[in-house]
Length: 210
Image (cartoon, rainbow, N blue to C red):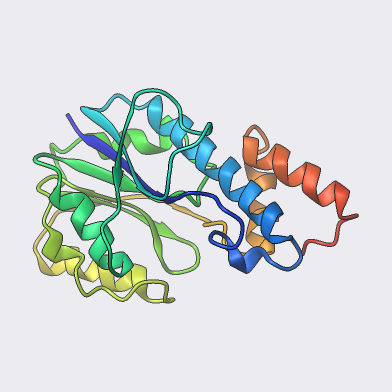
């Protein structure tokens, strides 16, 4: 079975979702990050997997559901941290970020099947990626990929193709990075904690988020 990994930062003010400020305060941005992380972990926990792992920068909090093994992120750039997460797996692995609270087990389900694919790729609307699955985890596929750029996803996907991997595609999703992203995702995923938190915060700021 597939190991399901979520890579995340502890949602502390000033350390997460800094691009949401303004219009949100650092505390509000951290609150939105916490809701997004809780939604992501809840969806991940409902996916049948060999193990559920939170690869965490920081300390776990009350937002962590039961059933997750928590391991610390290594030091280094994001490519190094992602590569290390895969290196710790001895079988198929699917890695998710914490910025797509709209995910559901149904969205993730195809990436648990490796019969016709060696890799799975979930592109983000901003040019990055929100999910990466590897039947045979190989850290070299990630090391050196430039992160947090408009071409990050394209470069990573090209790495998979260059390695000759049969790559399946997951839906393109919007990462929550900006206030505009937050508003869009909250509207698209009205059932989530993230949407409820966003509604409360934007009501309290009289609709200043844009």
